[in-house]
Image (cartoon, rainbow, N blue to C red; front, side, top):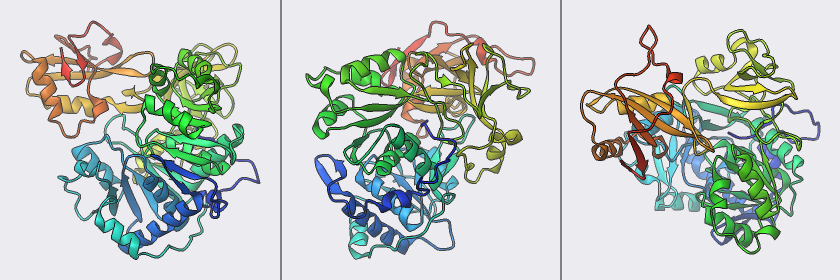
Length: 510
């Protein structure tokens, strides 16, 4: 999730990411920090143009110019995104936690001509059959030679509605969907967030959330370039690393999704935390207690909102929003009856929608049926449930369907269930979420034909190459039968949260 803006009404706003970057071409006092190294914006954009030149030699003109990026957060990722924005190709963010056949399906679904990987991600695709997709290791000699031999690519004029990046959802009933993110998606939201928090040339924006996600690219990278700020890129989030980098680089703005505040608060305080440079911590899904404790420890403002990769709805907290609410309900956002589509009265749970249309949602790539379902009746449907209190504030109430929220990512129960059913002893399984302080714990409720051994179960999961690390159940409950309807469909609301048979510790159960 990220906090995208659903409308754009300022005539002074820049409409493409290329417009945002145009003012940084000659900037040499700001740029990109990474592991103690610094690259000016001027050099970074030159590097982007050279990369575009190299890619143009390999991309077939009669196929979609889609380049998959299977990388941790690096300046390379940032330069490739800038290259796509300025030189006319489409970046595909590939989730580095996907495995095996699931990753193959993502690459095929997005029509990737190429996949760029690094030394630390090459093993994820080494043994996969990707057909005619070209694989290039950006840490290897082929990429180095290509960059050395390439001239900077010319700039390409883009329109706000041109496709810039495909960002995958995690999938709620099966295969993930690739969200079409246009120039407008990034330019509109980035500028509105930068304006809201007065991000400018003196700011330093911290990127540690994965850059294949919208949170990092919309609520971080785009905010920085909108304000002409510097960026600190962290390869992977680390709680201790955040505190160290905050003081090392003078970070003033950072984005998050899920549990990072909680993890950071568990670290040993630094004596300078309360007087740190941090002004704003911006994201979603942090608990009220963590927001308050974080703001007090670092002397900053923590702003938690609600939105999605698709950009169809955004709910913004106000200073008077209750701690347990998302923010005030403001048109065109509405909470409606799931069956009738009519607004529900206060206290009644309904679905959060954008009643005026798609907002910034530009559809799913290669999936017209899913796009049509999301836009039923000309209304953007989030699939999220909420209720509104008497004062008009929205309170989150869960998700339609089998969505799980683990470490800031939406996961589908269906794919996990299908993998567990490969086990020869498991006859039926229902996967659902057990709410915890932040997000969900995954529970697998299992009906087995014989005895299950916890050690063998862990070994079985480890052998499933398409089971991502965040998809492992936290709890396993073995039961005699699952609650069912007359048509033999499992009634998940009746599963409850009884005492688990096993709990997971790392990759072992007991």
